[in-house]
Length: 280
Image (cartoon, rainbow, N blue to C red; front, side, top):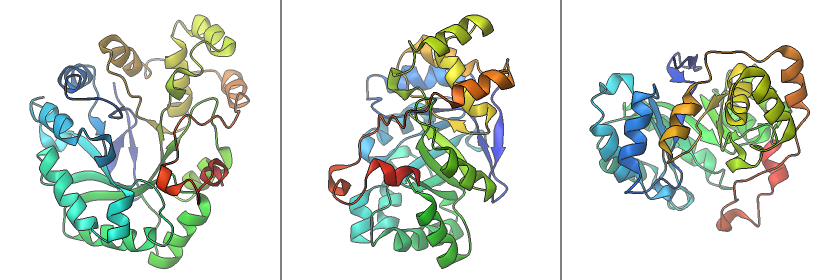
């Protein structure tokens, strides 16, 4: 059974969702249908994934009441630079066939733009077009800037988190300030699925290495959005709420961190953002 986390605006967000990265037109219907039948209620997408239309169409056919779904999308870098945040959201909602988003994120902290973007998002939230607003790939300094400028912290900071990429200090900063952490690429895009420690723990708990990695995150209160087009993987990834990892094993998994990033920094930001920036 999917569990939830309470955001700093009292909204509930599922701890498990389906990541939409690289899920295309052919894959979206079966992926969403399988996810819904497996208990997923959160679906994450973005304009840069070029699949909002396909995800929206598939979600609209799932027969789950809108109020029981949690749909996330993001504002991309060019819309930030153009100051077209409201227009970007309007296009996203049209593609998704929705009247509002449950969560709207700044996809990347574009220097000189993200504070203005945040202000525009606050206005969209006031108008009821989005329930919650947050960020993705922000470090603690950028989060503090938002708080100092507007008096509030984002509801969510979406970042890469998995046993090989564990930015402990940033996670602790977020959680201590009421910012929910949501992990994208929580399976490390397969990077740790044959790791000896994960495989041995899989035997111990009668779970797959993927389930161990996902459980490690949610047991820390970190929401996860594993992406998959494989029906069995989608089902298996959902079965992480029926067991717990022992404290000594959690501590061992914590030590696997290699600051190993699988996500690429966008080309238009590579001169101003480094992987080290993402974990400060």
